Amino acid sequence: MVNAMRSPLMERNRCNCAALRKASRRLSQLYDSILAPAGLRSTQYAILAEIDRRQEDLPTMRELADTLVLDQSTVGQNLRPLEREGLISLALDQADRRRRLVKLTKKGRSRLAAAFPLWETAQRHFETSFGTQEAADLRALLLNVVSERVLDADNKSSLSGS
Image (tube, rainbow, N blue to C red; front, side):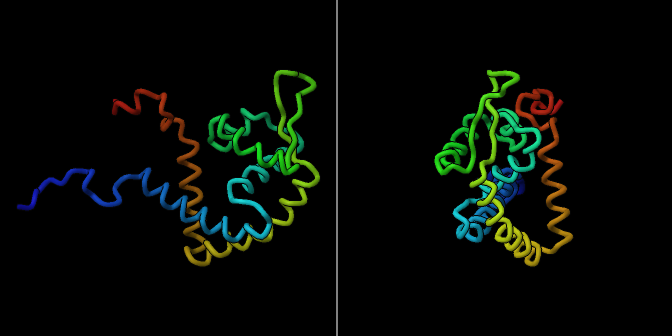
């Protein structure tokens, strides 16, 4: 007998989170394979690019975590291999010695520069396959999701539906 009301758990691809995670894994696979000749994964490239953007105002680990929408321990785990490879360095902030600043080294800047044309290839591949305007629209939607503070798990009113 067919049930007229199907459980949301039974509806294929209804979960927003699962769909986003699947898409993220697929894109990460694409970017990782294209960035591999530079010796970087997409997550590492994103971290190095963010640090490079902040070279005039070096980020702390907390600021980097907030920008990348990660917790501090995950950022620390991701920074360790980059530090071991000499791509980044951590330094105490001279103005506030409790803060550790993340800095791109000369080697890190060089690796990022070598990876940039590969990243452009990955971007071009995705945009050619998906559509340039569609890719721009998708980025805008996803960045909107990132910026929506109402989605914060600690915002109890949004979780209760009230």
